[in-house]
Image 1 (cartoon, rainbow, N blue to C red):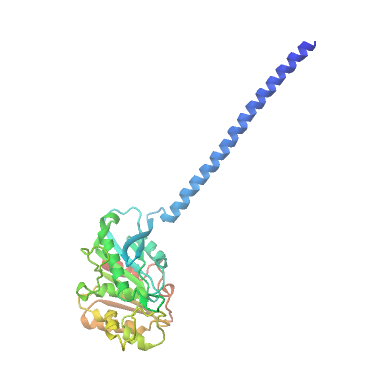
Image 2 (cartoon, rainbow, N blue to C red; image 1 turned 90 degrees about the vertical axis):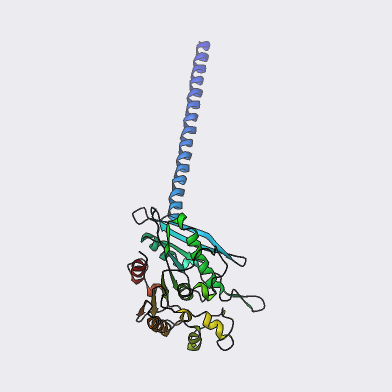
Length: 329
């Protein structure tokens, strides 16, 4: 009887251990499933996050965004741009160069991210560029004084032409738009020619820095009259002096100096309440362009200040998109 009980207990014990072992394997298997599900979730989430950073919507208006592309060097400073383009476009299309504001001594290329994304949705390759900012050294001397900034924006245009095949750019259809200091640089980009001595040495000089259409949002057109207006002057003077002691620099930095009959078409948009740039700057350019027989469209907005969002809404149809479509498409 004791032998039978012993055998019975041994059999039950083996069955118990077998069941426990199988249960343990089941538990391990279930845990592994949970871990795999979690890892898969993180993987899928990472794909979604990366996609949202580098790509726009997946409809017919989708775009790709590439950031921190080096387009040149200014002294020891790497010049960078951010580029947005249609996701599926293969044929050569127009390109736009957006130039930020900041009184020539501050600002960021992220300022125009909304603009370049919307441009890409509308069928353009669009870049927002950084350029060298004027600053003071420990002795109060200006570093990156004029014409460093115009050298840089011209370099960006040459970079676009050098990379036209890579990004499906039509090198004969490049426009530019800028706000504030960027508006001034856009005008200089459009109005100056190689004979004016403002090309610089950045980038591959076998490519032209010429543009075919220009938009200026409250850009300075004449530094001498702006200086005497007297209501605003940059904290760091990138012209290094006053009109009295360096008049030739003020003249060389002023877009009105370069107005010519065969200038590219220009659209100027100014607010009558800007505390930084008066509408007289736009009106001076307008009269000189018309006197030369060049194409200039002037929009003076009533009860409007200086900021970009006051002047234009990039997310909607507006005069800027209409202007570029007319002259570049």
